[in-house]
Image 1 (cartoon, rainbow over the protein chains, first blue to last red):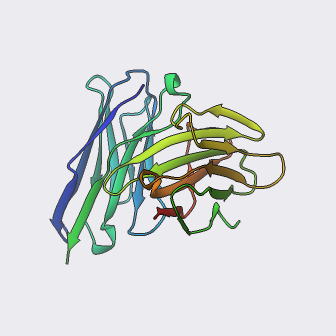
Image 2 (image 1 turned 90 degrees about the horizontal axis):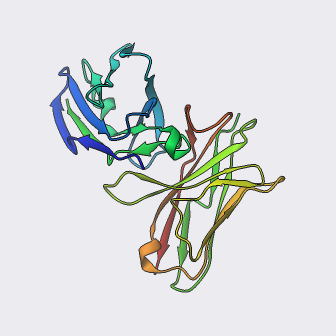
Length: 113
Length: 114
């Protein structure tokens, strides 16, 4: 099945800095890559997603890039704010896994004011 | 739209008891997914259901665990004869057309086994 590796496990930045979270996947047939944000004690919520026919997608301060050849994708957050502090999960969906998202282990982002 | 509703939020069971976790998907969503989350770990897929059918249960242990999504009523994740290792947060998610799109998660049920 699909295997998703996520790094780093913890990321600490100063307010206003940029943050980058990286994920790799194993199945070259994977074609959908969502990112979820989970605040402490809350439900995971989708913040951005990208499909394999696109190399980059941006939504205000958040962007995702996809490198299909290298089988990795990254989340970029610019001008970080304290409310960005949360756990971020990447995921990959593959036809071989019924398209069910396989999640990474998560990155705990801490933004210091 | 009330969103995905899970209950109870917290469930305490003693070893050997049964745990029943409920999930009502968003209105119009016929696809339901159950995930399990342990501290500092990701979301581990358990089972995918679509009204009255189990589509994929490859992530669910063969013994003690079962899931259903009846024609009427919520989806139920049932854990029989719970053990301490079953303690975790169980999240349900739903989507309108399938798993290859945005999933809407519930607030989760925190199961504690004493």
